[in-house]
Image 1: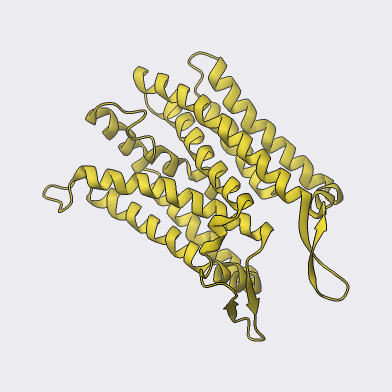
Image 2: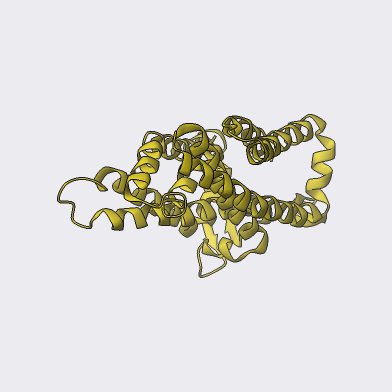
Length: 277
């Protein structure tokens, strides 16, 4: 649900692409402004649910990528402040500054979330003590997840996905011919790099994956995650259904004039695909 709701962040990055006038920009912000709390809430639940269910997983993954998560949280604070003060009379920074804050949240927030989730597959350089305390093996303290090719592929894939979903959302939610036409173009422009980057991420992680050996050591094993997929056919089926739903929503929105339901097919599809992943 968090990945689906990132269409709010994607829409913020399109404020000066889809909207060409101040009135059009306000239309986009007003449309997104009724949804932004859902993304913020699911981000908090994302962390809280992991803490409640898998405290060891929480302490290692969130601890190991500490600075990357702090960047994400700071970006989301900027978003909350921007929606609150953007058009208030006499605000200190001015409307345009808050628009820039929304764009920063949309770009850096989505890429960092994708990169951190990618690190669940690619690993982080830290040790876990007897009391589940984390010792970093790098001076970067977690920010190094942003310099891993697989993590960046997933981060950028999430970024372009959020822009694709936002364009589908605008097509469905705003009755404005110019915004509809520009949104349709953005679906095409952003869905292509999304698909390419996602395939690149899958190609990298399906080649090698981490496994716990009989001697309790953790080692890279060829095709580990690919074998996991084969061992869980129901999960693989859910992944395929999700991918088909996303592609159907995108392709039909591009090809069929005035069709506005793509956000529902792509949205449900991405929820299924991310659950399977």
